[in-house]
Image 1 (cartoon, helix red, strand yellow):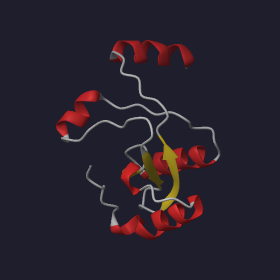
Image 2 (image 1 turned 180 degrees about the vertical axis):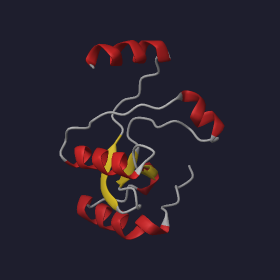
Image 3 (image 1 turned 120 degrees about the vertical axis):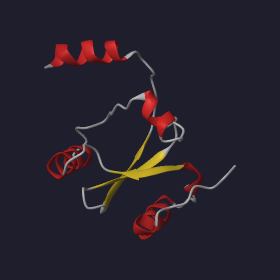
Length: 112
């Protein structure tokens, strides 16, 4: 199994995370990322993650194919950053569900 490469910008944060856990978990690293495609949204969503209010996310299956990377799987660990790439926390993928877009869209409309 290939050990993922930790981006240099988050390496000190990741090292502190592993030290706090008392375990080497680099093999479970998935990505370092922010949510949303704009600064205001990314920073707001990061705040919700830190507050424990944002506990799920969604992505399009074709985007993983287009980027030639595997989708996340249970047990993966990701670093959430703010818009500027400052690492804020580590999240764990607990489960992954693949559903038709129409299913997700219909459920989302009912919650608005």
